[in-house]
Length: 226
Image (cartoon, rainbow, N blue to C red; front, side, top):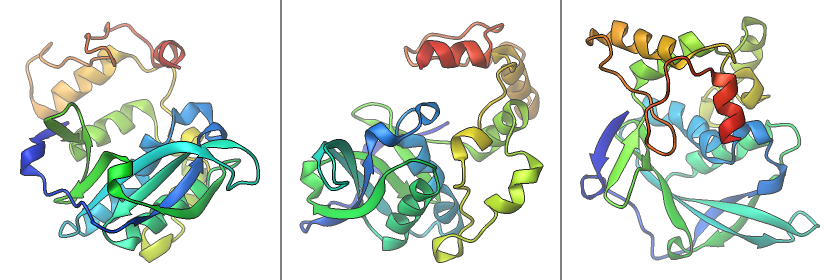
């Protein structure tokens, strides 16, 4: 992960309401663990291809009847190029069973600042003063070890999405799921090997900040955090 101080990022905060994509939270498959990873996946390709673009994404959560039944929805608003909004909608639209729509406008002050696009990366907050973005090299190592999209599915995932960006959106949670038999130690050693780091210098931590055991399996961690 790459970290940057919040004061060094150039956040957008419009004085006018911004458009949103609304997602019924209860319709998101359990294996996606909410909306965050899907949002990041939808934004990453265009952000990397156009590093000059900037946008800040605010999320408001609340009750809604926009899907003709009471629901708890996330309203994901983009303060920036509309291309990013279309990509978010397209990504969720491709997940079977997810209820999603272009929705109401919100004012940035109504939501939480949860994502930011700058310098070709998608940033997320670590705490009140620090944000982080995924290092592309580390991402490639993890995908190599944990498994990526099956080859039979890659042709379908290369379909053109909005603005000519490939949209890997058919069944993202399942196609990009990590292999359950992969171990923390194996991933850790691979990262050390690729970056030429001393053995034992890399630690993979859980949501509580504690280092994970080397023999921990991905399937076990999924159950624990699910």
